[in-house]
Image (cartoon, rainbow, N blue to C red; front, top):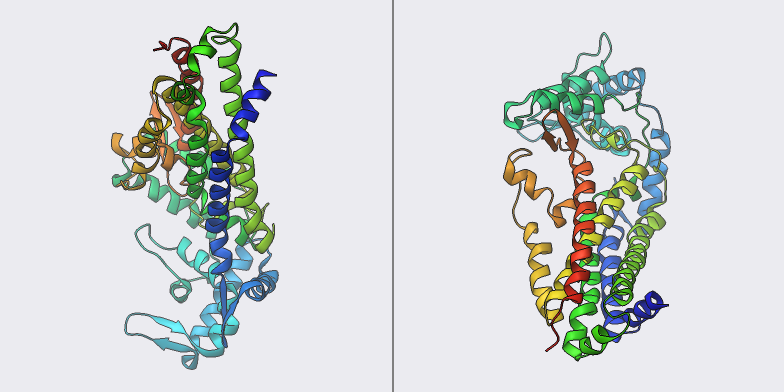
Length: 408
């Protein structure tokens, strides 16, 4: 009953409804932008909105195939055949590219796939596109997956990464867990979500704004004396306040996730949920499907939110005004937006990748690892452990802070 009372106390505040409404609208706008901006091109110009999405899906129907060595070899030969005809080739002074019907019929419908294939054969410091495919010799096959493994090994062995032998082995073993051949297909809706995770930091802030007065609001209203002198003021009521805050945060987070994921998946469809994440970049080491990647990182963002709620409650228990709580929280959430990592190793970079804002970004394509002796852990695992520990440690201090408050 106490938890229910405290939960309704949070929920019924006009400020709660206003903040949540603004936050949900903002989340809908940010995750809806890729839908509003979506436009697909054909030789007649841009196709926008639902028509463009339908057109793109139709093009991808022919690309729902396993990327076998035979398929890749045949695809490369087709592109090389197009370049063999001088009438199909344009030149801008730096590189050659296909023009006219050769481009619109032979390249445009599958350009992302062709670029993915080409870039697998590039050196780590280069970016290849379909126009580099004529440089490949496919007389004896493509050795696509062997080249993928070699490129990953080259990346891991790069002196600039400064990875230990144990870290190299860790990432190499993970990369080899991916099933071959990769299954290709349409995945636009899931791609939008994966590329937009960090936008949920605004939802976390909104939830913290609502939670900020849980303890400090009692001080501000002068009701702390009544509460702390009551029978359960220092025991069950404190626990109820914390439980209600976590319950509210969880329900609010779920609502934001429904909006954030629902808009792209409704517009672009759920197609691609079971496709491997590495069809966006073959050097991604995580053997996740798109749906697994989204669920895992959403779980981590949820843990970040729980830790931020715990910090909010801790500050609320020790500060006399909710505004002071927010003055401390805002820099913690948003200052990490501005520093840019200059690598994936070193104390500065490894710390930056664990801060709340950066922890919402999965960094699937980077080889970020933490080593303790012979134990190597990837960033996703360390973030999980860190934010669980932060929540478990801070919540008791939040409760004790309110219990020990000296009523003036």
